[in-house]
Image 1 (cartoon, one colour):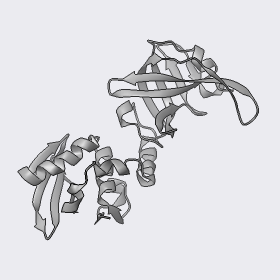
Image 2: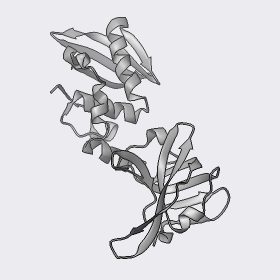
Image 3: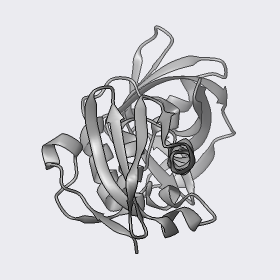
Length: 226
């Protein structure tokens, strides 16, 4: 496996000083600097041919080659983000190798830590494990609720509403009174939600501390679940 030495201090980039798979480190950078992982990987491929490329606010420069490893420098304006070597074999993979590392435990912990107290998040930027998620979205669909029984033996109704903002769509798990409080077409404000994956599909859940505000109405808390 291709690895690199992460030499920068933890408080500067969120990762401990250790050897990391190069794909995981680049996946982390794409998340931290909010650049699409596919475009990020393509930028490195382009840099190999044209010496320099841009991806979002990041500048990627070709700095030479040692044996079979290419040296890249990443900067943001005048600030140096990272400089490291990547083996040429890394670019021979058919699919974007960064995608395999977007939901590793290390990256999930980083996302969860940095989402606490954050302001509004875009659906496109949601990652499994993120907590304290705040976002504004429009309700597109509300499927017919399903009757379920909880671990305590209580009955409840649940549905997964489809919501969207300008960056994407995601399902929001709604329980009992929460379901009747929203309608298709409503614009809702979600606070303190959590992103998770259920049966391979990314979803949002309010949890016990989450709130849901509809238009300028009252906030519906997670206590209305049971």
